[in-house]
Amino acid sequence: MSRRPASRRRLSVAAAALLAATALTLTACTGSTAPGSGGTPDPNAGVVIRLALGPSNLDIRQTAGAPLDQILLDNVYQGLVSLTPDQKIVAGLATKWTVSPDGLTYTFDLRSGVTFHDGQKLTPADVVWSLQQHQKNQSWASAADLASVTSISASGQTLTLKLAHPDTNLLFSLTGRAGTILKQGDTVDYKTKENGTGPFTLGSWNQGATITLDRYTGYWGAKAKVKDVTFDIIPENQAAISAAQSGELDVVTGYDATLNDQLKKAGFAVTNGKATDKFVLAMNSHNKYLSDKRVREALRVAIDHSAIIKAIGGAGKPLYGPIPELDPGYEDLSSMAPYDPAKAKQLLRAAGASDITLTLTIPSVYGTTIPQILVSDFNAVGVTLKVDQVDFPTWLTQVYTNRDYDLSIVDHVEARDFDTWANPDYYYTYDNPKVQSLYTQAIQSTSEQAASGLLQQAARIVSEDMAADWLYNWTPPVAIAPGVSGMPVDNVNARINLANLAKSKG
Image (tube, rainbow, N blue to C red; front, side, top):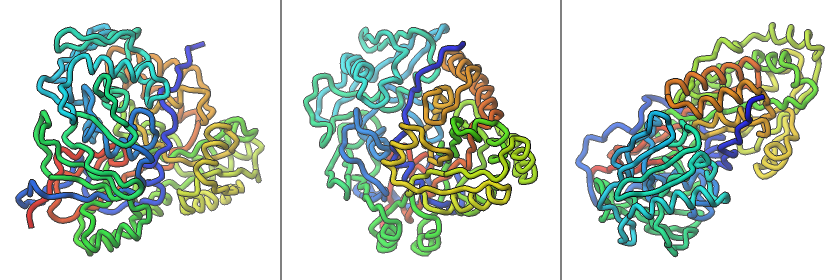
């Protein structure tokens, strides 16, 4: 039996997941950043961005929640490498890196002339210490991401990481929290302050209301194009639209697409971005009916996915497997479970599961649109669906921790999270040794192409097993005011790199 890898991730208690709950799509082009405004950038301008949820504190080392990633990654804290909105790994605090042919040694050339926001110089010792702290403090976010690393050392400006086995996810992990570089021995109170190396410093924080980032004049790279950026925390959609209409906001994220016309009338350009969000209909295989693959397949083919996407305003793409388009291993698996109510009835009869009742446990933040469609679709094939809407903490305890559910829906926002399907202890309850083996082989491959192929095989098996249904891959809307350019539009629910953000004069 193959070794079952421990899950690299846990469910993101994700502000971004909650933001996605009611957001529908708008119009338009897809890209990594918003189109330019055509005006002359004003270096003294400030930009205000609406977020629906803010962080409870600023400690990116230990505090869960997507708002910290959105606000602080890239902008305040940096790693040796970084991630573009379209998921490309690029240089960060390292100018370049190499990987040995056997995949067991990673070397990075550290930039010179980098300072922390308090004026102290970045040294190789800071990098070694930071990565060691991320690795050994298991309470820190993403500590498990560095589990393959056996030693971290420096010689001059060269950093060397030694691995116990190849890990094709290591560079990706270093672009996130596990790779953030801190000052060795720093005494800053990370819950309320920061000391990073990014193009912005923390200007002010009014918990639950606003967070302002100021341009760091001592930044090692190209200086920020705006003087400051304020994240305005506005939970209620209509309040955010009103603020945009009155000129208080320059960018609106995470809003309901039914409000699109109001934004357009206010002069905002609306763009759909790509994202790794996967709205997963989990099926608990411990249920006596759902333990039968035929029942799971029947539910999948009973779902009119196009109707769901239409109902949410087109804010999504069809997704018939566990890997979205932006992640390695993606394959179009639409042939796996095409809409076919007649087949659903046949499968249910064959499984002796006609006229059954199942309960859908779903966080109440996701509204009623999707549950209503599922109730109708399942009723059409002889399945009664009861909907139990609960608050998110209850969902975490009942579904995520105790696995006490039949069906459930959550937006899984994280990229490269296929490991959850290779973890039989995850709340999905899916347990396939072949998938676990393929995932381990993929992670320990020395070739990204080979790893992607192995992940593709594993994802196909998961879909063939009818382990769940993937209702859609969300495409989040971003509304941008005239004169604003360089605003990322892809994966803004995960991180928002402000390096190219600009606002024209006038």
